[in-house]
Image (cartoon, rainbow, N blue to C red; front, top):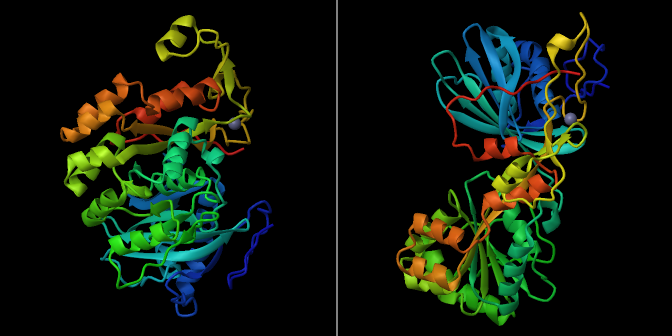
Length: 448
Ligand SMILES: [Zn+2]
């Protein structure tokens, strides 16, 4: 049933399956004045709702909406892959842009400046924050729209499947009450989820843990945010946590070199888990060394750097099993008795269809072949050999080589675990590890 509690009534009730997003005001508290913008609302509100609802129904993380010649074109990003969304005539597209700006607390009158706002919204009983960025351009304004569910399910380590090897190392450090473990990744890469899962692998009932930094609206069971005394230095604060029997401190955002140095200075008596942005684990080590400014100190206190990447899971409804050849298994380094691997279903062959016959499309994944994402991990462990590489200046290439030489956990290695158990396929790994390309072809997409 259409759910719509705005002034604009649904005149057409034919699309009974459609459930519309509810817009619940701008995040900045600025009320969208639909009265004074009646014409705009009449033209743009309903199609804007349709567009946003379609994006949410397709499980989009974000979408772009931009003018291209005579049309406004939406492109959806689903599980990190772009695909084509609906198109609108320019005039209507422009009305959608302006109404979304208005709803996000922005000024629809301003069209030549970058603006950013956000809408509170609800869709299928899930609350979302919808960030709306307006970007002026030659052909007209475009929008970048990002969705974020505000109520996030409490995650336990198994949910994203942190490998045992990583859980064990973190648990060990917590029990010892020393050392630094960094969780690194590019921004918006699931970094915070990985860090929280890392924290959850610690038995926080036995090893008292505290958080230093912002948590947003997230929480970790049995770990509380420590409120530092504003007159205290970070050294004083760590001393206080230590005296309160604190064994572990989780820094939610490590970017300050002075903080990095203080963490290292104190890592002999407390275990630190810290979240830091870096493109990958080896460059995370290098960045940390540069921040601390003392390679030998880092070599003695850093225990591990963990990073993760999200890959798409094969749709379990329509994935296809195949028997791998011995040669393929040998190439991949999988056990030779592996009988079955999986791949995404091949698209239906249009030529086989009778006239007027619609191709059958998997309803579980909308014919995409993938549904949901899983994480794969990499961990640089600071072994005796790795200590030498770090003390010698922590060159990322040298770190990478050492990881391989010592058979430490790499992403490719971890990904094979998910190929072997049928969670994902080899094509997805090729896509995930391919260097970024300039232009991506939108994925095949069909409505059931
Ligand atoms: Zn499917």
